[in-house]
Amino acid sequence: MADSFSSTSNSVSADTSISTGNTDGTGAESTAIPKELDAVMEQIHALFDGSSDIVYKHWNYGPGLQLRACSVYYSSLIQEDTVNYMKMSLQDLDTHEIGPATDITLEKLIHFFEKDGVSAKKALVVADLDTAVSEISNGRLLIFIDGWDKALNYLAASVETRQVTEPVNESVVQGPRESSVENLQKNLGLLRLRLKTPKFKICMLTGGGATNTTVAYAYLDGAVDGELLREFRKKIEQISSVEVLETSYIEQLIEDSTYSPFPQHRYTERTDMAVAGLLDGKIAVLVQGTGSILLCPGLFVEFFQSSEDYYQRTVLSSMLRWLRMLAFVIALMLPSVYIALSTFHPELIPTVLLLAIANAREGIPLPAFFEALLMEFFFELLREAGVRLPRPIGSAVSIVGALVIGDAAISAGIASPIMVIVVALTGIASFSMPQYGMAIALRILRFPLMISAALMGGFGMMICLLLILLHLCKLRTLGRPYLASLAPFRFADLRDIAFRQSLKKLLRHPRNAKRHKSIV
Image (tube, rainbow, N blue to C red; front, side, top):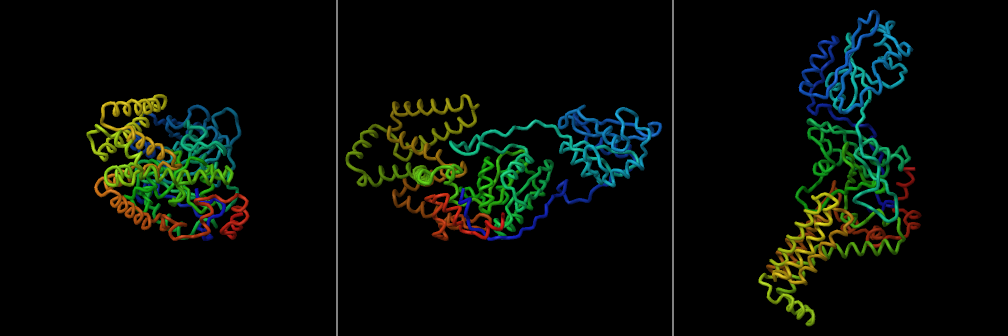
């Protein structure tokens, strides 16, 4: 999390209009609702044919109960028999507790709802069949009335969702314990509670295909860079033709380099971290049905920072950041350094340590590279098994498996104790990364470094590291340099990268004072 209190960004007055995608994702013209109820129901029956959970409830009302209407909804999305929406609609026109509503005419009903009369429960008027079908699929109740070419749309969804709990993947010792959930409206509400300013803008989009998933992106007007927002909007327009199931779909649509191992955007399930990113000029992306919030763009230095850094004292936060940077180097280079030193450069190892390594490797039939490759394979296999197994036994299997395999490998003479220590320390170092995406990048890049060290020793490692550095310098995320604050270098930004200055200085002397005044 970059300096959430004082990051540089260009103030803009962004377009605050809400964007919406076509409901069917095809751009085709909408189909009108026929006035005759029989014709409407014929089309509805044809569209939902084969769905056992679709419910049709026919009603009669008006003089002599001659007027007809029909409610259509999914029983799997709506809790039945809680509210009679047809009765509620008629009560808005003729107050009564129980009765056939014989005084209500079709003209009176149409006039009331088209003029947006005051009702007990707000009903939206839908004018085309495509929208009506989409709304039924979204958990709404539609009432079609004979003689009217429109339908009444009620929000009646009642689907169980996960409650707001403590974050699972970003636990902290000190700080808020409020996590995002799979309900989009709840997540937006949690962000609104923390950003009490009209400058906080939320825009809605709809994915295409059969899912029609609702996607929201949010930003802080005056904090977000104008060029960055335009670049983001240009890329996210693609979702109108794509079936979106999860936030990672959006990430892969808008990332600049698809085949880069480095993550170009950050994930969080903490609302305080999302708000800090918005204050920092980021764009937050939320998807209905997904508990993760995507922060765009993600810079290299931000993957070493945790939300807890701003809740701890300055000295401790700075020390922890240095520890994470050291863990990054260990997780990336330790196996390849061991291979290069033991194979090509033994003269660089102190004599006592060299003798210990030689004694440990005595009788090992495999070269150092294949020994490291074998142990890394076992470790990655155990890590994957621990993730896929049920939680109560996953951790136990991974720990016991590591102990058993490590001890068995040493006893069988196919791995040395020093190699087991190197692989274990490498794995532990990768676990210390605050962002899982960066840990995955380390797991991928570790193997090319090991191969280069096995082929050319330290010289091969230097070539591989230079190639990685060139890739990082070239990499951009939403048009911004991935190594921003380091390359191009900005001295003022160092106060919240390797070290974290005191909160008093960060708040008292922000790097962009105008921005902070503009969002109050």
